[in-house]
Image 1 (cartoon, rainbow, N blue to C red):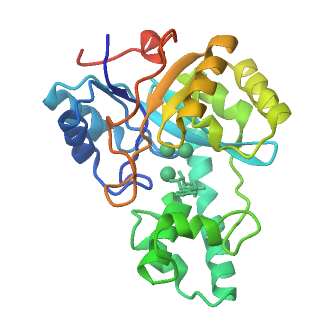
Image 2 (cartoon, rainbow, N blue to C red; image 1 turned 45 degrees about the vertical axis):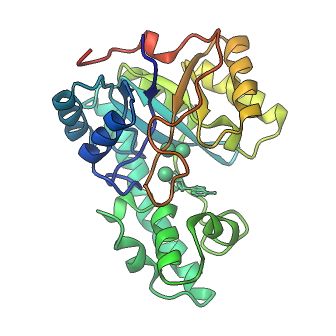
Image 3 (cartoon, protein in one colour; image 1 turned 90 degrees about the horizontal axis):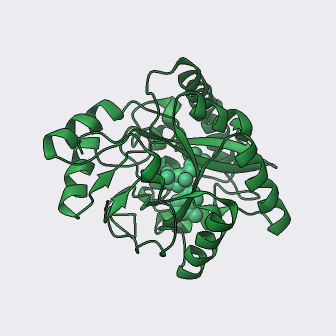
Length: 282
Ligand code: AMP
Ligand code: MN
Ligand code: MN
Ligand code: MN
């Protein structure tokens, strides 16, 4: 079985800075032995990712990170082993991407109102298309223009609820996102569960809604999780009968604390998500 899988990262097809080929190269150099590229709401980098992985003899599985909403909170669902041509999933991803354009315009208008001009064009300098604009691209602009020292500081002062530059998104519902991944033959994984601003009751409701919609996996080991959170969500995976996943959520060498393949190993006794995945180039 795999010793060092990394099933969550981003390329320049969403808010990462590297190409899928460069990520595949880094994965191999870092000792990753099973890899998935999971761009936000886009599968456009997957053909290049698969080709690069194949050329390097790296085991690969298709992936995407779908933005959804639940109880007013943005939740991320990683879909692994998806059919990248599935019309229903592609339609849902396209709708999510489409809502990024008016959202980005509203974010820029808010920033302008607090004296930060040119944010839309500034963010676009880091982005391939308006429909891919994310808060990360605005964050890079705010750092480059000297308003913040780094992207972490950006999210403390801007772009989050109650701060300038926050615009409530209009993502697909949790149920629709999870269902679309399942319909495309994929396995839905609840990403970085410790990141959500939900209390214990709301987290319970999230798990229930996720599993009722067909969700099957839980990200246990990821760069957003402290060691005690890894233990907590390992227990949750066991108690709730969910398959355990792990991924660095790597975005860029300059911004990400952990590179591909630098995750702590998952606690023992979990059923790994890759036991249920169709993996190519094994
Ligand atoms: P969006 O899809 O436009 O809502 O942007 C979400 C992205 O912003 C995430 O995938 C992260 O890459 C980034 N992000 C969100 N919160 C933070 C944070 N506190 N620090 C750094 N990056 C963040
Ligand atoms: Mn991101
Ligand atoms: Mn995420
Ligand atoms: Mn991610």
